Length: 304
Image (tube, rainbow, N blue to C red; front, side, top):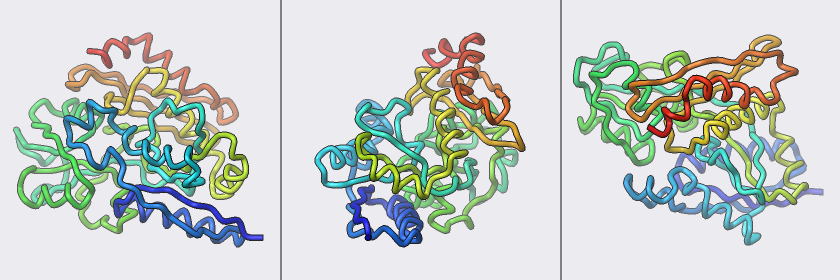
């Protein structure tokens, strides 16, 4: 017997590409038929930079989709996990879907091959406080300028010579087959990724266990552990999507590694540290790394 589900998603080309990836994976199970995807323009797509920050930041990208779940218009919503606030409404639940795409940030420039090649006073575009802080930590000579819009719009602004370079997430470029524009992949050691970067997630009502079972069929337990602890670290820092916080978890042989980054908004003072434990003891790694950061004054940095 086929199960019919309705999937809510944003209307952008990237969001639709991501949703189609999930649909293709679900349909391979042979038990599920997707009858409807519901593309929606969210508040996050409408607001300009100043309004975006004042009205809730990245949580605006999921607001309307959550309303559709509550109203029964959709069974599940597909998000980029990094757009989902670390503190989720108790009525909802999320699980990762598919494998993690490349979690790295990337450097894109027309005239320069790497960040290290940029001259003094170069203008670099990003909309992320985390990326801006890590850029300033690399060099005080960079001019970091706000950059908003979808991926194609941001690349167009670079070509229109409004920036010497821009920083984007590798995952979105990969999913749109735009890898050719990438000048340099920035290592996690230099730029700790955002919690959940490169991960797609399914959000559904907590009491909808049938949908949970379906989404777990294309999920991965190890990845779910990684994202859980990344998000736990952000919660421990009491950070939101506009805080300069990075968190990246991964399994290396039999160990679980969780790397964190916290900075003041200027990138002048920052803390970067790693927590390593046995993979079987990964639960609460985010809390434990958070304690290390708090003892080093992380919350003062975030609020400064």
